[in-house]
Amino acid sequence: MSRMGLKKGDLVIVKKGKDRGKTGKVLKVLPESRRVIVEKVNFVKEFIRPDRSRNIQGGIMEKEAPLSIANVMVYCSECEQGVRLKRKILEDGSKVRVCHKCGLSLEKLR
Ligand SMILES: [Zn+2]
Image (cartoon, rainbow, N blue to C red):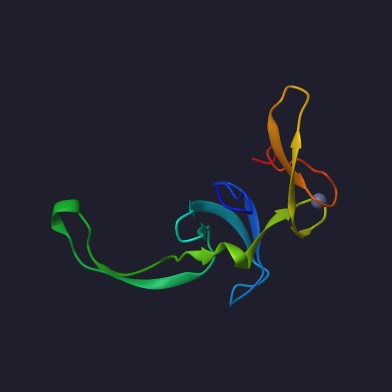
């Protein structure tokens, strides 16, 4: 798990780069490279080679490229901005991630 504790499905806001200010859902976390793929963010054009065995036509496709985890923050709908997370242990012992500012649980948003 990354230091920031990002998970698939989290809503994040981009803090740096050409897509700064955009929000999107985390589609995938890549812990080894400390990157995330965020829905509809950091689109790049990709040239696809035709592959008949997989029924791929080929051509130019746009897809999301991974972003550095350092460039995104979890977006809190209550604070309406990117926020730091803190951990909270509930009465039943389960751990949840909450907004550092307002305490909103970020687990329930999904
Ligand atoms: Zn908040």
